[in-house]
Structures are given as structure tokens and as C-alpha cells.
Length: 482
Image (tube, one colour):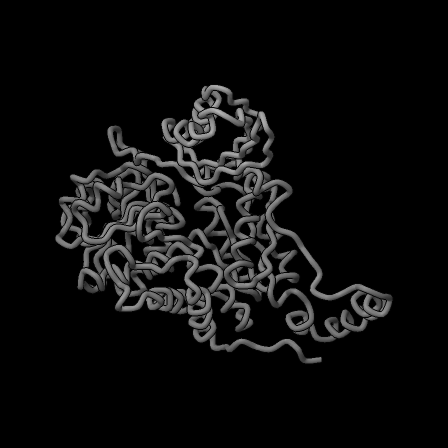
């Protein structure tokens, strides 16, 4: 999410709870007799941690070696837990392992062959001399690359490291673990082979040139964590240059998920998107894309705020993107701040910065209000405070109901694009994807605490893929022909 709003002093600070993201395993020894073993769990809990496993890995007459796995709130809290364990009489700490770092050792993805290479015949077909026949066939008919190579099922996940998660401009090397994770999600949820491409440049011309040069090897380009406004130009230019779809997940993935969630939230409160007043916080990449899709879906009354307040035509600081927003929203020319824009609104959508609203602000909204506070990890308003006044609340967090997560969208979107051999991403495809995602939640399931399905729901990716494929005018095609 973009950080186009600054945090207001005295705003909320969401209380953190132990999380598997800060999970540690402490290998220690305790005396075989006595109370030390029974005191281990108590020690962790007294420090505010949560024991998730306790395994005896070596037992002797005098000593027991035990692995204690527990969840902490953050790194400092993990150290407090270790100190508490060490304070138990008879405990000797041998090793402390951060399970998240262990998961990332050596990277999270790998390439493996789909065909056997057990003998000379198989080697001759997979590589030289047999492969030359396939290469010449593609040279004669370049379209055969989709049929005879990994192009048909490959996506490049491209970043310049300028806007990574909520971490900011941390560079391409630091962005690589995130891109690896994205590639793993592509494979897990849609069977797509995705390849992290981390570029050591933040120059628009260079990014466009590099991606254009590598495009022949891919069936689609997923732009990721590129900051605004650079991302707008990169995407627009690549769409004009390439004959494969270009999708900026921070924009379009977010927009699909927000529209799907809002579709169902409005069903819960029995309101129509054409009738509601929507206030948005955030005018960067995600906010602009969300706005465009909401307008395409029928929204008519929207006010967008950035850190200077409402975006309107009377402002003298409008760049091209803000001017477009001003021309398509805020018809009455409201020029106040976010708190004023929220008053009387039916819907709040935040894709901005933490702690910019309070529960008292939400109380000024219309009855049966919908609040999407999507800044991560700390939302624009405390979810607990918002729930006291709003009928439906969603966040980007996994520890509250209604998590709006882009993984609900991008695997299925690319599955549909690749299956249809699409050459572009259209607004109609995005609308179709949002509608399909919303429909995964059945009328019987729909409620204030269930407006989007779980990312592990088996129908999510297939439903989104089918909708995109149909919108693209294609069907899943076979690739087994000689």
C-alpha cells in the first residue's frame, strides 16, 4: 500500500499478539528429574509468548534435550522469552533458531526438470541434437513458442525494489525474498512457473528496456513493488510494447480484491454501489487502481484524500494522476481533510498509512457503514474500534476476519490469461475476476465476518481463472500437439 497519508499524532497503535512470523525454536537441556520440564511452558507464557510445540529430542538418565517452539510478538519479545527460559533453574540454552529465517535458507523456490534424463536417447531429445528441430520450428513460426516451451506457463515477477511491502525502497537484493514468495504462491495456487526478476535500476527507460528484452521467454509480466508514479509509466509503456499481458499486482490485484470484498459487504448491509458515498484514503498506485475499478463497477460518489486532504480541482499541486482523480471524483469540490470526508460516508477504503482515523471518526459515518482499513501491518484505524461503529470491517491482516489479500486474485488472473493466450489485461477482465471472487462466498456463508473467501479455498483460483479466460474470449487450450 502507498504511504500517501501521514500518521496523525495520538492515533491508534494496534496491539500486537504472538505471531508465527516471529516463531523461534529454543534447543535446551534440563535435568531429567525435578520440575524444570513442567516450568518451560509456564516460563514462555509468563513472558507473553505462546508454546506451539515441545519435543524431547534426546533423553538420558541425567539430562533431557528439548526443543521448545513458540510464537513471539517481535524480535525483542523473542529475546525476552529466551531470557525467561534461561532463568528456569537447571536450564541450559544450546541454540535459538528463528523459524522464518530457517525457511528462507537457500531460497524458497527451485527449478526442476519435467522430463526424465536417464539415458543418451532422452538426452538427445531434450537437448542436442533433437532440440534443434524444435528450435527451427519456432524460428519458422514464433507462435509455436507458446506450445513448445515454458513460455505458455511462465510469468516474470519484476521489481526494482522501490516499494517492497511496507518496507519502502530497500533495493532489488532485499526484495528477492518477497519475489520468491510471490513465485511460490503462483505455483501453489495456480500451477504457474513464476521467476523473480529483481532489477538493479530504478530508471523507467532501463526497466522498460530490460523487460522488453526478456519478454520472449514469458507468457506474462507481473510488475511488483515498484513505487508510484514510476509504476504507472512502466506499465503503460510495456503494455504498448509487448504482445503478452502486463499486470501490476499492487494496483490491479488490490483493486480486484477490494471490489470483490465491497460487493459482498454491500450485500450484507443491503446497499448498492451506485448509491453509496465512498471515502478513500490513499492516492498512490493502489488507491488509483482501486478507484478506477470502483468507478467502472458503478460507483458515483467518491472522495479521495491524500496527505494534504481531499483531492479536488481547486488544488494547485495536481500531477497527471491526481488531476485524473480530481476530474472523476468529488463533484461537489469538498476541500477539507480526511476526517471531514468520512462524516456521513457509507464506505471507507484505506490504502494508505497507519493510525490516521479513530473509532470516533468511524462513529460519524452513515449507519451500517463499511470500513476497509488495509494499511499493513497497522491499519488506518484500529479494527476493534471500527467494529464498535461499522457493520462490516476488513483489513489486510490475518488475525482479523475479512482479510483482503492479493493472493486471492493474481494466481487465478494469470491462470486465465495464460490459458486464453491473452495479449493484454483489460478492465472487463478485472471486473470479471472481482465478480467471480465475490461469488465464491455463497449466500448461505455471507455475513459481516465473511465477505471474502479464505486464500486456501479450493474454488478461488479456478473461479477467477475461468472468469478471466471467458472475458478474454478464450478457453483453456491443449498443448500436446506434435
